[in-house]
Length: 452
Ligand code: NAD
Ligand code: USQ
View 1 (tube, rainbow, N blue to C red):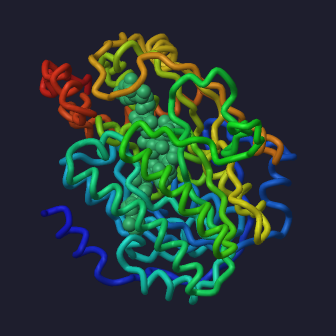
View 2 (view 1 turned 180 degrees about the vertical axis):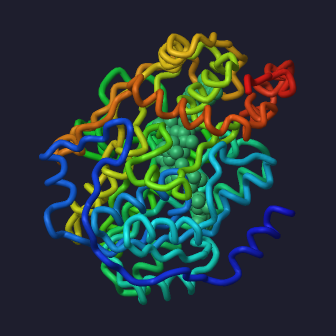
């Protein structure tokens, strides 16, 4: 029960570190590597003077923090809400971000120093502190609420019953609370939710996955356009499917304006905003529960650890760079559905790649070999994935694709902080079922050695 005790301790009060807003000059690139945004995309994303008040739920996390900085940099007024549960899970797992992330108070102070802009931070549990959430929405009167605040690791969600139950309780309650709080506060805020490509499942459907809705012919030849069938591959992914039904219901019942972003695997670390000061550094998860595949391979390559390819590496997945996550969010907040319109759904991806091909790219660059491990997950050994991302591209996104120069950026970050890596956390530590656990029984976490 230690974990829940910690949660209760950190979320007992809603704490605001700073308030206020001071618009200033937009900075697009402050990096050794290039983050050029094409002119069309810039026009579509900033829309001249269309500055918004935005609450970012989960704004202390891997996607939420760089998105908060990006939106603030673009002149939007940002309020971060986070209960720091992700940091507490690190403590529970005996792990830590490879990069030395600072406390929220240090982070927002550093941002104020480098940009002149204020970001308010509020410590609040979206899934539990309902009244405070309503009060916050009433006080802030946001134009948009971006919802990142969920337990997001599929392996963590499959670890044991406690983790399964926590993931469902936290994610589904959080999303339901958000809908109720928007209704109760009587603020017409546009909800932008981070969903996942995993709601569609990873079976090979034989065609392109459309953006959220699919044309079907029901028995008797009746043509309909319905939410794409959900086919989750983990308890975590199942919560995103449940979320999608909640959005659909509250939109229909209460006219909420909702955009659901079905995002692929996010890779990279820094963005043009986070590299402006060491104290702004983004989180980098490398462990078997929270580390995602490409960032893990890049970390392993830099440390001379054979790449942990699960099964045949035949799984095809969608990828997006963390810088594009932030850009997509701004496009979404600038293009809300009208009241009464069904939930807007975008596929937030840049490209699809097969895991073993990604491993080959990293192996070629680093000279480290791929190690094909028994698969800890219950998933198709091989799948094809063809995904439409036309909506974002039509709104001006020119996505960053897997690129060796950007690989070098991640590698530099890893090299700088590799002394912080605990090699015993690299092998997978969650198994989808008993059979998978038995097949992985020979994996010895203490066998992994890193080059320091
Ligand atoms: P993260 O765990 O780094 O960040 C989530 C943040 O939400 C954390 O800071 C956590 O403390 C906070 N949080 C969780 N529950 C909360 C609650 N009840 N109240 C307040 N705060 C809470 O995860 P991330 O990688 O930044 O992902 C953010 C969102 O994007 C998630 O919803 C995830 O499902 C989605 N997503 C992530 C990826 C990816 O590859 N990282 C890909 C697709 C979709
Ligand atoms: N994999 C390996 N080796 C590893 C880690 C993963 O081969 O060391 C494989 C897995 O078996 C899987 C694939 O790589 O087939 C992707 O795994 P992942 O951990 O990178 O991604 P996933 O569990 O799907 O979850 C991540 C995020 C989640 C988000 C999802 C988007 O943690 O929040 O929703 O990506 S998507 O995959 O498109 O559904």
